[in-house]
Amino acid sequence: MSLDLKTDCATMDQRAQDILRGNDRGGFTVPTNGLYPYQFNWDSVFAAWGFARIDLVRAWEEIEKLFDGQWPNGMVPHIVFRQYDPDYFPGPDVWGCTHAPVITSGISQPPVAASCVTRLYAMDPELGQAKVAVLMPKLLRWHRWFIEWRQSGGAICVHHPWESGRDNAADWDGAMAAITPGDVGNYTRRDTAHVNPAMRPTDEDYDRFLYLVQRARRLGWDEVRLAEDAPFRVADPGMTFVLLRANRDLEQLAGIVGHPTEEIAGWTRMLEKGAAGLWNADLGAYDSRDVLTGAFSNALGSTSYLCWYAGLTDDRMVPALERTLRDVRYPMPSLDPGDGRFDSLRYWRGPTWAPVNALVGLGLQECGPPGTGEQLRKKTAQMIASHGFAEYFDPRDGTSAGGGTFTWTAAVWLAWASPSAREVA
Ligand code: DGY
Image 1: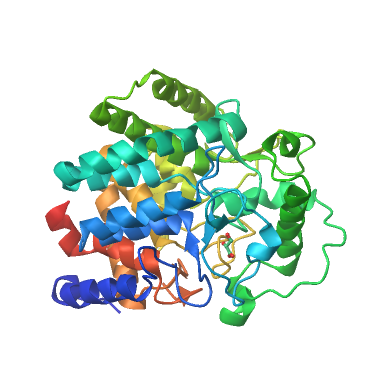
Image 2 (image 1 turned 120 degrees about the horizontal axis):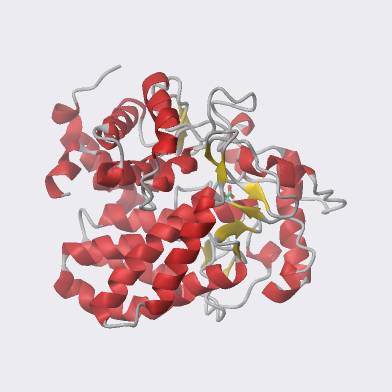
């Protein structure tokens, strides 16, 4: 089905706004009711970007509330648990983290916040000036935590697949296979009560997810102890590109509030070098690399295309980009359809995700091959308009998958994909 985006735009915009308001829990937004009943880090930042189209003050509040969960060491956790909800596993009782004024998880997530803050500031510098002044030291401490605890050879590593935001991506297959989880005890997954299990990570994945959480809890979430004999440490182009971009934006924010920029500029150079080391010549793409074995994952996923977003105009990625935009009906698939592990509906093993499309698209619009960013934006808009505000989509035909009435899909619609977003961009 092809919709007339211009005619239907107002209806879609309204539905997207209703979803944001419906998932608002009082200054912070849940990704969707039931499946994810807490504030999740990068979901929340996308929510702020969407709210900025309708209520800029509310957008700032979303970011401010996320930083309520910041740890003394600078880490901004991937989940802020403000209340207990038995519908989600693993909840606060499993994480056992009491490092911040609110209860949180113990790992982070892609640091998109500084980039969003830059956008919010640009929309109203007068309002933004005081907000940036408060957030700047917090963002700085978070970026410094990444450099201190998650950096290897200039690239950013994840210590848990959940930290990447791409829980069951093929990027982690080798490192996950090397883990023997042993007895993690009895537990009941709640995600598969909300969503078709064929669209979610497997039980084998969950045993390992849990094993990593239990180990970290046993070690008191102490980064020094966690780094010793770490069982999972994978350098990821997705995280590296996102932090590289966020760091460039942070440098701009530092200029706005008169903060010194040398340290931030040094991180940018370090991350550029790290990104270069993630080029897999055999794959012809940026690729994740197991730091413990040195092996590449040989997985071409959507986040490999974030190089332009990171400010790297890399022509070597152009052939894969053009092939994907040409051959995949709804790009960008989270795993290349030509990969034997591709699974069109299973979470990060194939489906297309609107928030990644938005970041890839912004990068392409800024410095990619002419026309490609707009092409991706239009295909994303058509996908959402035709198949709804789902968590993710089958790249072959757009079938909606995962949770429904999803915050970040609605937010991406409002902020980037909608034809009306072009009028304010
Ligand atoms: C989930 O529960 O599926 C989340 O992605 C974990 O971060």
